[in-house]
Image (tube, rainbow, N blue to C red; front, side, top):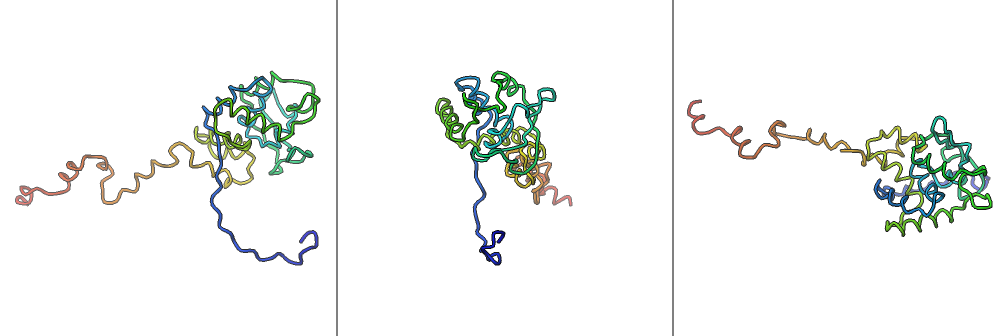
Length: 230
């Protein structure tokens, strides 16, 4: 419609689709992935999305100027979707993620004079295919199942939520515009509300819900002696 090809928006049928599935690494699996890095540079490359939740395009576009060593924050302001021209982030918003001590050490170990952090020897920014090759090779060495690069972002969020981090905090660090998007990780929260299931106790005294059956019957069924007295 904006380009003038359509006079009006066509009425399209609603299509029912399954909930999106994603793959991620648990904390111990992510540790194995980082541990098999061949050098400091590859270690920083793999650790960055696991510790910041950055998308691939955001990692390609990250500059040394985006690292605030004093306040220990990573500022994600832009992206290079598909490794192409620099643009804004997907949400169009700037976000800041705390710099973990581990990532700080990894980045310090690869400091160089180029504007961009993750570059080739000639100073050019990495291409998406190069990043995937590093990930696939590391996955094979670590004996891990293969997940896509975006799975490292999912791992960041999943490990946080399963460790008890509030969804609102994860939403802010991921840069999601709506909490609805972040709620996909809600089922990973410790307990995920399982303790409330005890409220669904019908016809049974909650205090005796876990008591042996014989004990419950003794409290509920009158004996012949008690019937005579009554």
